[in-house]
Image (tube, rainbow, N blue to C red; front, side):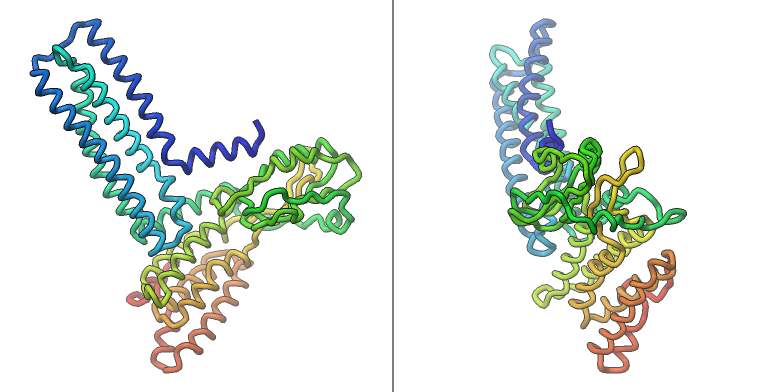
Length: 424
């Protein structure tokens, strides 16, 4: 199985909400057979009236089925509301929520278990199957109430922003594992290799967004062929069909084209697996929508800036990739593009500053973000932050002609409006 096939299976399993509930059907069928076999072997029977128990089980089965339909319908409506009020790019994260998947799995399991118990009530009531079905229904009711609370929390702006920031921090640690202190931020680019004329240029076969690529696999391919592979697009870039995807340098052999194509995943929309910028993109989109005239919710934008500051702090304290990988002998085998610190800061700040230019709350919170990062991150990170701070000051002078409003906008405030405490 190739890396691309494994990647697609892994992504489909993580993003599909139907797989685990479908497995719950077969688990329930196996469970009911095991329980009934134990009952028959031991001769366990309850003294409940069979007709009464059949009515109870039928009612429970109908109730659980109604519960499943209600949860699915409510989930779809909630996702539509979140897409409209937050951003469509948040929908994929909702369907990855393990609480939703496991809750639906339990509901389906309980429904099938209750049906199995109902079918086995004849002259007497089987003990294990009846009690298992009843207690599963009770547990499903408890989990349903918890699910309502969980979905409500995850679809609130604060919950959505916290989830995106947590996933963003995880991908930052995976993509950039080295801390900045004690090591250079970026190794010298192998420009002598790129200045040479490439022997082969491979074109993309299917248009879409670059989701991820197999770094170690590409290094091994280049090492076996004794060449250097350059991956032209960056993770998160859209590549059209027949657009250059790889370039091959060196005097060695040529890697198999099929293996190269199987080392890159191209899809419809960006994911968080190897793309820390996508987490910032979601946070900025939520802030931008909150600042739109149709919604006019600058407080949501301030909450987004809180999480943006957290991600920028993590990014600023790490080496942001070298754009190259070497083999075990120390020879450069793979060259690829990575976003640098200026790219991340521009992504995180520019649009929020432009869309929130007329909001004193946003201006004060952005100033607090920039000043805090200047004080707490290494000096080499402060250059672009000071540029953004200067742009913010000029934007405030442009949007706030009154001296009083300008004075308020020039204050650093972590709450937007309401606090002047310095945080480090």
